[in-house]
Length: 92
Image (cartoon, rainbow, N blue to C red; front, side):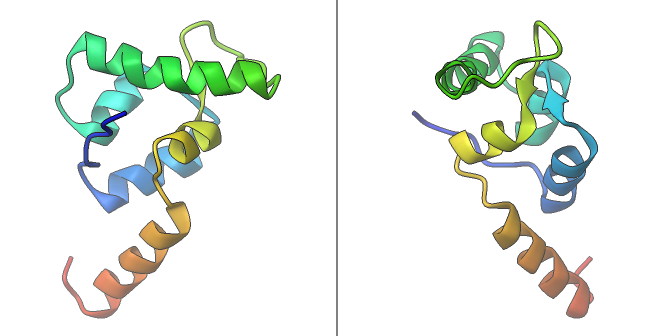
């Protein structure tokens, strides 16, 4: 599955730490402009893993944030280290 590039490290970390579940709004914020079909494809991949792992969803149209980042290959620890380095070098 092709995963779009995130829009920014700051935004990805905010979404990861602020939401236990995410929906279309957060997914579009994370990846930028996406078609509804792409958002659905991304969510479907996570929903499948949620079903396999028996992880319940608290919102009908939401997906688990931690599992979503894992499914999409977004390494939060790598993002955090990059964010710290960017701030150390005053590249913000």
